[in-house]
Image 1 (cartoon, helix red, strand yellow):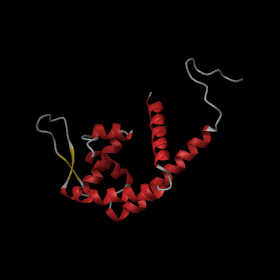
Image 2: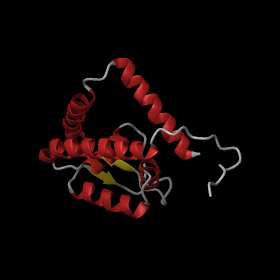
Image 3: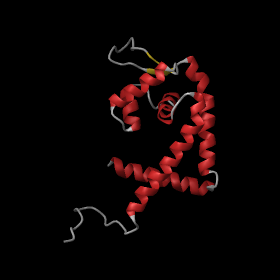
Image 4: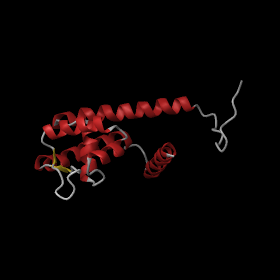
Length: 153
């Protein structure tokens, strides 16, 4: 027996949503594969890159913010930060003003690494998105934000 949709929910057009999940998964896998391959000479992973870039852009200042930024639990993010710190790319130092806070910052080695990993990211983006027009990229970005916003509701 067919169930009615939940009250207030719009009927989704039948456009093969299973295909969307598969396509998003495959696109992400391809992106991660190329990023990992290009980052490996720099001794950093794609997951670690997300944290470093978040710190550089000021979107991530603490473990809690990194967890929220990535959508992963704090335990996993603590282990990720431990690995990045052991490589010498970041520092964690308890705040003088609020002893409960442990701010994240790039080390000197991390600051030296950043231009290289930014160039890698640009190279991978160019490889994967280079055949998109500016209008297609803008539309793609808009649609991804719309998808993310829908998931956050």
